[in-house]
Image 1 (cartoon, helix red, strand yellow):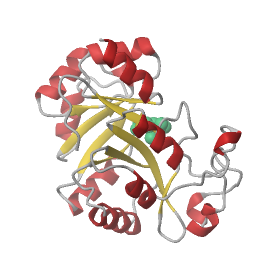
Image 2 (image 1 turned 180 degrees about the vertical axis):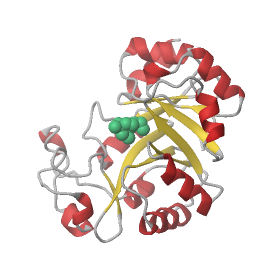
Image 3 (image 1 turned 30 degrees about the vertical axis):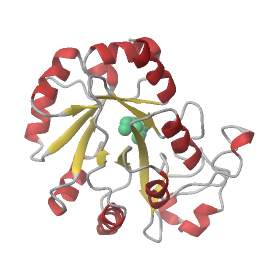
Image 4 (image 1 turned 90 degrees about the vertical axis):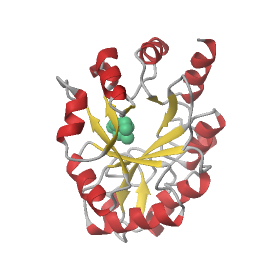
Length: 246
Ligand code: G3P
Ligand code: CA
């Protein structure tokens, strides 16, 4: 995984979702081109047990198709256009699998896989199969709002890096990680719910802090000054540019 000194990691949300259709190969490629240190993406399980990169449980909002991902096979999902809704120039983009993203993203770029589907043995099996096949265990952080899923996954693979997603106004962010009973790698709070003292306390105890989703330049500046370890943004180029000016 990339090691960057003295500045937060730039983590492209759903790729570079502000400038390209979210969670497509074009969006991930753009984030990498813009200098992102990592990319965030969302996964669901298809009917035939493949990990599909898409935010919503259905394809309705982000493709020209309809229906629940869990009810469709990879072949069915592959036929959908996932780019035209965003801009005609992205027509032909498809809904990628996690495997395709692993093939596309250079190994030095961190991948944050957010689990959006329920826990299942198939999910666990396919995730670990891919992490091992593409040698991505070290360079991947698996996050979820459902911390029980992360607990199950890390019980199966103690080396798995897990990130706790949350949008609650916590009294003590670092203690939440300790109380989870997991070996937590990173905290992923909604960005307005964590202040510099919380972030400093967490990072002093060895946690990474990656707030989401910071798109406004003023809020990016605040997150940088607050000492966040990484910043999840739809606009990696905007954040890179800000960091270069500081
Ligand atoms: O992982 C950070 C962020 O992506 C969580 O919210 O709804 O964009 O998946 P959401
Ligand atoms: Ca997400």
